Length: 266
Image: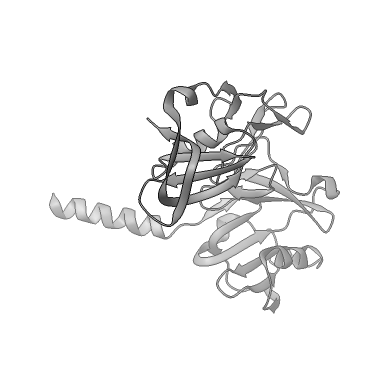
């Protein structure tokens, strides 16, 4: 029985590490050896992709992420089912079925938050975010905090890796809007919620002393400043002054607080 379990685990592990993931029109950690028509170095994924689109006889490409090397390829009726696992290599299959304009560039896919569209050489291509990230329609980047529009009536948060926000994106009007004063946007509930919780969580007082500054940022009001502190386990005090929010640890250091009004966690 023990040998059987070890064998099964070994087979599972072998299968897991020898796999590739398909993202829209390309796959990560895959390759199909041969069929080369041109190759060159000093490239990027986008440049390699565009070069293939601009070459009529190129219907797929391979890109090495470790050294930025590109191979343009041609094989009739190429499909992802023919590809094999190859760590560090990305393969894109050309899709010339839909034309596009600059307005379509970096457009999110409403059916899948990991996918987004690029307009390259006048053709609409489907890209995907790696490492379990999601496409952010506002910053036009992939990150782990992002949400995206799933319906035209959706409202989603304007994402930031460092701060919380009272702003949100309206999928219907395609504009950034803001919650009324005292409210913040809840990313999970997708709505504005009251920031009154802050008054029960923080005590306002004046203190002096030497502490440790964790980080500072420009925020719109003290409620967002306090919530930013709540999301950081190291943060114990916040100072909010003229839109500048400072997260502070009470550990003694060289950051001087001189009779300043602060918000301290209770």
